[in-house]
Length: 169
Image 1 (spheres, rainbow, N blue to C red):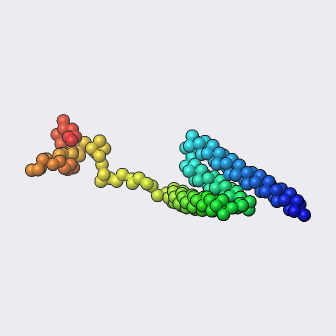
Image 2: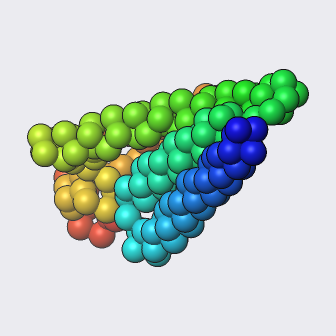
């Protein structure tokens, strides 16, 4: 009877260890695919590259945590369990931070889409009052007032200049 128990236990440990290995390999593959997609997205200048990479890393962390949780089944000593618990806590903290980053980035992307859809311009339109010296008509002159303190202040004056007068700066 003891031999059957030992055989079942060894088969269980073997299957569990292979399952942990398979799950962690899947996690590594997800990271590699995410990085390749991110590099491609950077080359294409895709605005969602950072979001997609963060989502891939978060998914890979979920696989790695799943492997670690499955590994707790075959732990034989308290020291191993403690180390495994710390690893799981660190990975969980990283997953929470990455999910927080994804949520913030999604919110930024949605706000940008909303602004674009509403037609709000990020740059104000030029008004008739905000002419530059190069846009002014021949009847406008810009003079520089040096004042008593030597400072300069551009003052636009509307007057009829002599035909040979140009815009002064």
